[in-house]
Length: 393
Image 1 (cartoon, one colour):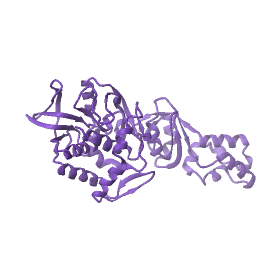
Image 2 (tube, rainbow, N blue to C red):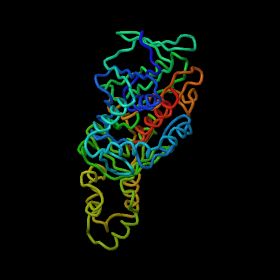
Image 3 (cartoon, rainbow, N blue to C red):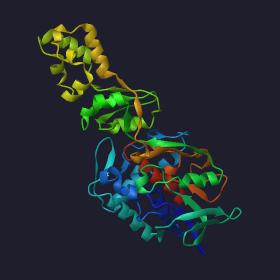
């Protein structure tokens, strides 16, 4: 039987980072993963360029049953710490928008950096490994039975991620381990995910596939100002992905398609100053023709402005400033960027990520009930929570 100080299950962002930090402390570390390569989600993220952190990361960019839990880890290993590591390896990167940092070249640069750090720290990585059972002897060693062998360790770290993108190997393994040790797991669902539409709305908007509009999207709990993208299945784009993490089934969302305009005021002035210009011609200055055709009744759109009543102006302004739609659902884990819910933070130390009632057992990264916004925040949670655990495992 092979014995290690630390065994980490999951060779993704959090697992590799934790392994590096533990290895630096001269702990013997083994990382296990069932996949054929490390960091699969890193490699596919950000369109293959990995949105590895965000300049503006704070605890306010996270969703959790306990919104304060993430403060400790984020404050002790910050975005600036990870950026310093990226700079150390001379990986070129750029800010795309809103503080989002991407590799100039490929996400493989980040994976190569993590693997180089693992090698320096003496970390062992074992892929193609399926775990059949995890158990604990009294309050001491953990035993991990794989299809090939039996392993033992003092500290066991679960970094198995969530359920998003099952084609990349996502599984509920981490949640099952939590439940095995009597930890509460908050219900999981897809986050940062496109919406599907009701059949009537889908038919009406089908011709808009590929069209993007800068908008303000609101739910009952939150508002985001960014692009929306019409797709052949429904609605996507940054603002929609963001709001999806706050949306509950059956709720409506409100989309302001002209967030920087006071359309009613503009139409009133245009009525007085622009004789015989059609309403749709006026609005074409601000919205694509296809969007107007799908949303505005044609008989109204083709009216000259002087012929349109104040009530019709107000209704048009309301429609475009407060376009209300009830999604049919989401595209689910298949395309979701992250998983909401997970291991209850009340069971964990916010400083070390250790299970309070099971010394030596740790949960880090996406498997925990901490979910970031779109824009590099989930990677930063992976780095920060992993770093915190890596100081003590």
